[in-house]
Length: 421
Image (cartoon, rainbow, N blue to C red):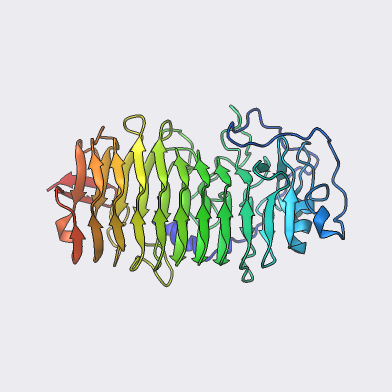
């Protein structure tokens, strides 16, 4: 994780840069699809037409064609601009977002409060995928206005970063740590919104889902395979969080599944009254720096999780040396000048078979207790950390006023390096 870009990300407005692209080149059809997507082709091949005046028709024909190789940006954006309930069809390869009006940094925007974006077939995922030219988010809330009370459900968002042996995303090697150099799949901000029963997979970099808001529900989603890991050999900063929660006030993040995200699977920067419960995080093929991270991102609640609870989450590695830290409380492993002032309550979680199962460094309050942590495996930690067999490490010089469960060893883990004390 790069603390700098996550701090800048809280501004939500990525600089728009118009980059010339070949408008006559269609995005390549993906060579594989996610087996869990549930999306099916309806075989109709209906070409997209103009937006209907009947809101019930939105998404059935008029938001594009999920069964061809043509970009669907303008049709989808027209539907989003109208708001209301937008039902899009399952199909293959899916609706393609390649850069609205030729601007490869401009994906789709939710512009109307109360918008509902869902599949036209209940329980079956419709797909929205990145085109080969896109170097922006697939979908975000309009950064210039407040958008509340929206719902997204039964949609698969794919950044297509792993879909070809060659380079499908032509800007795939251009991910950096600055403000406009890490386009992920989704950025959602606002109050009282719902994100349920969706998939967000294969983000180019940045995050599969970045969130900033209050009173939201993020439930029963599959967040997986986002970014390229540190072993990929890709230049720049190609890794990606699964979910980056910049601020959560009275929100719920429950019963989601995270698999093989390459930065942090579930990262939280601050907020009060947030419930993070019943999530499962696992690593099987790609390396990640941390599973569950209670940290500090810029904003009114930066590093302050008072009144929030992180409970009943399970974090594990199915293959050794694939996850550096199962649960990490505090931002010192990345930057020892960034502090978590109150970690909230980190209780009743399970973390096992990771390089380090629980690491606490840079925390000034809260409770960490009752977590089941066991069987640390490997020594491939984040950065240059190579300490083996650290099940539960605490830096006592950098942790104060915090209730800690017993069994820790003294471990200094600051600025991408660690050592036993």
